[in-house]
Image (cartoon, rainbow, N blue to C red; front, side, top):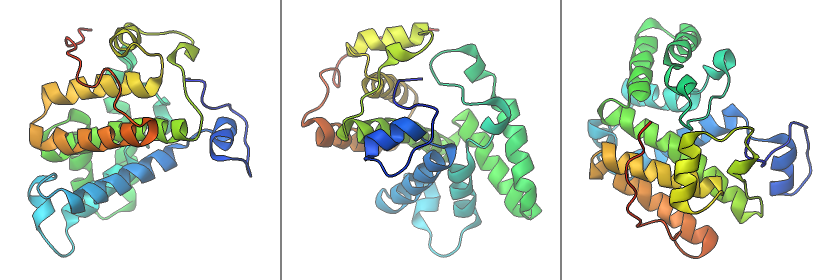
Length: 231
């Protein structure tokens, strides 16, 4: 979609070239969200509420990591619908929840019901747990783009078959067609407008650190005042 990957398979190539020929799988994205979940749980006390302050085996933590590792499993039924303002993205929750419930049949009823509850909170961005997982999911997408940029592969939103109104709005706000900028400025605006500072501050700090690591400085839009996007 962004011109960063082809549909062919490839191996034994440099990072950016290999990604171009193979692309990124849902499994890889989910694994990285799972890793970020554990990293934030251990490094930011209170990020996941009371779960952050307990020790020993916790069914809630199992459910949290299970959702992080399997949150996109619904795409086997509905495909990958970008969060770019298209109405299909906002109407896919029922299908994704149904597929997730099917996957959870592999587990005992207690663990399955706990994981399904966390998944529903993730879909609704409800409670600190759901909001935190939502933000980590979006953060990973931006980090993946910056990782590829560091290796010389830069996407372009104008490679999309059809730009949405949301795409155009944030391209103009960021003064860039680089999806790392466009997705990041959109994400930054959303989290600052919807979630408490205690949740979004560590997320934005990691994103800020990644931009500086890759580019040597923050994007010019980082502190820009951008009016909320109205669909």
